[in-house]
Amino acid sequence: MSERTLVLVKPDGVSRGLVGEVISRIERKGLRLVALELRNVARSVAEEHYAEHKDKPFFGDLLEFITSGPLVAAIVEGPRAVAAFRQLAGGTDPVEKATPGTLRGDYALETQFNLVHGSDSVESAERELKLWFPDN
Ligand code: RTP
Ligand code: MG
Image (cartoon, rainbow, N blue to C red; front, side):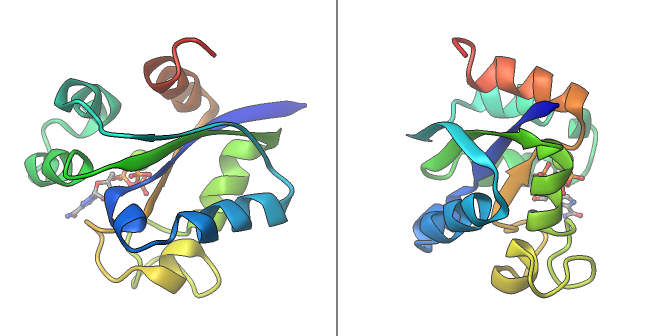
């Protein structure tokens, strides 16, 4: 049973030259890239993407950051792809939650600049993929 998930390499990952590292880990895990694109995100798309956080104190900073420069958006596919990529990413706080060996654990220091996004459930993935890749 194959699943699809949305992966973003956030603007910090792109500006730091870590796109290849993220893709490499996705491929080494055995997941498959279905689509991959460098994009500048419209504020409206960012707002919709992170709508669940709209009342949080960090929402403004989050939108600023995610629209601050190009990011990479990808569709990643494979068995249990949603959970598998969350495992590769590591916890949201790259120091307190993400463990060494994960992308965030190895390459990030601050929660706001935590390198990657992965859909957090199959339902979120469906919603996010419609938003980011309406033609797929
Ligand atoms: P993401 O959605 O970006 O993949 O991250 P996540 O599921 O691990 O974490 P989530 O709770 O959905 O939070 C979304 C993003 O908001 C920023 N954040 N900042 N300052 C803070 O306390 C705080 N909390 C969350 C992070 O960039 C997080 O990835
Ligand atoms: Mg999330």
